[in-house]
Length: 144
Length: 172
Image 1: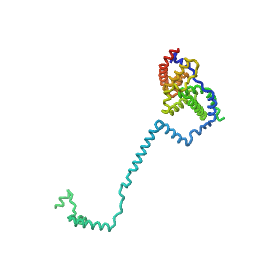
Image 2: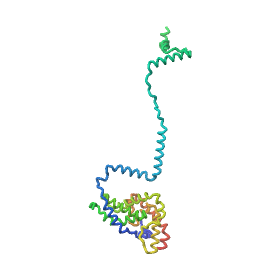
Image 3: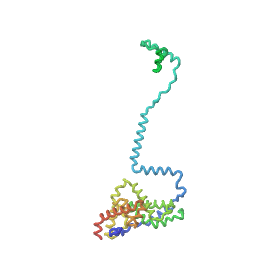
Image 4: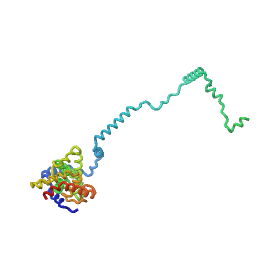
């Protein structure tokens, strides 16, 4: 790119010199710094600092927005836990009833049947009168 | 002496501090910030003496470190000092003071016009005009493609030309 007059004019403007007293101060600060040994640079606990730095970098642009989002999530979780049904979802398996209870239940069932006047026979009798119907292929044999 | 033999921090300072100072001052427009960044840079070099191992272009590497530090600082300023960008004329000029009235006016206007450029254009314009770097060298220092460096320079220079043309024509 060819430099024109305007660029030459700009280039000719002298820049502000560095204050001379800075040299001693900056070099003193640099010399007082302990050089970090090469082997120690990736310190064993450095991952915590690294994660912290990465998170800070990630969350840096809008910290209030991220904090607000985190607060909303905490609120949602808190509400979810407070509304949680504490009763057990499955019925607890109960112990088998004792023989006395079974006898009592059968007695009540019989009394109920008498009161209602049902023609339905008790289970034991029903089993006696039950005759299985013949299958289709056995119909002829049974008829003869 | 805690510095290792391979790292002569005084030599680095004598060779590079002046251009780094001008570059940082043009970016930050604040003398205290410039000093802090410059000290931070040399302390970093002292703390990590192997940082320059294998580096062929010390100046370009140091400009990159300085630029990154300045960008971090400008971002940290964030919205808090955003208005400072709009009052660049009130901030310190990167140019040397002069007694010539015409030159004084021109430098003040140039400093203000530079302050109005976006930081990325200002960095490229500074390195091209006052460091004499090529676009390839600027690209390497700022970690951008050479074409981007060239286009930023053109846009920046056009803005400066538009802003300073009347004054430039008057005092030419």
